[in-house]
Image (cartoon, rainbow, N blue to C red; front, side):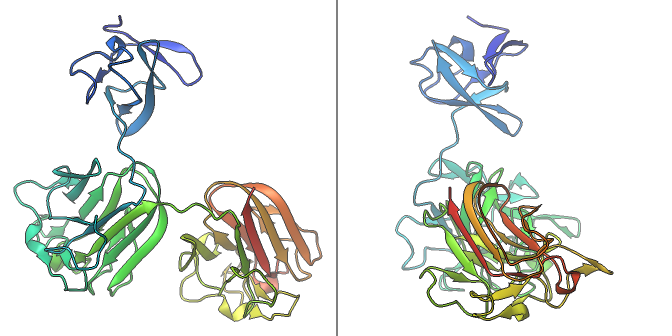
Length: 402
């Protein structure tokens, strides 16, 4: 039996001696037992070693707990999100017509309540609230349809005159999720999801995207009198949709050409993040950032120009720094993986045309790229401003799982 020293198997199969022995906790593991003392029956299934915020898998072989890496405590893995997701409302009662398994949040501190094994609730400046709660800020329904709760109606979460962030958190396992959040009132400039502002200056505002969640889902506002972000009405979290087996097919002219697949999508030249297809963001970037104050809708032509119609990457040469033409990228946020990718660059100017950062055409087009590639961080198709003579236009993108 191991006591002061635990023998832990690393992912590569090497064995090392560690100066501390983890203690296992949680049913069905007996309280106070050493991980090394557990039998197969006592430690049935998988457990998690927790080291700070890092979780590593830990299982049982031949009566001993064998782990990928060291952590001070062994825990059972966090509960997975149910197949149907979780749906929360924040008013004083559930609104009529919502899903029968919807959950009514009651304004209590994070850690004081659970849904499907996952903790949820409210934090002030990242810490559980103590000595008060936010139950008194609940209103309706029907106020703003579903009812709402103020992030901090009584302005308690402050340091002196500074309003501190008030966060509603759900402890989902790390991963990709489709997240819908409704901020129902007009004061929304400081509303955040996962630490990023998601609304304009004036609401109401509905956020609905597939995102990577790490360290739990976090929805943030501020005290009522801060005029940053007043209230919360709904949070719905579901597993990220799978990329469709049939793939996605995009065209870029002013209308869809005749004869294309019935599910084809007409891109309208808008900024990346402004449009979604099947739950996946797509659109245009200038030098890696969403375009702001303009779009590329004016560059669309045809069809039949070059058969399918086209859009210029930047017909008006707006994406520049001084006299330097910056890369203009059309991006689709597909999950990481292997895909068959077809891209048509329909005009003669193609020496700078790129897919996933690599040049894919010769000096003179038109050019059709058709390959199976590894995609990481979204599919990216890149050209430049019209007068750069690097890569003028885009006609078609088709993506299917390999």
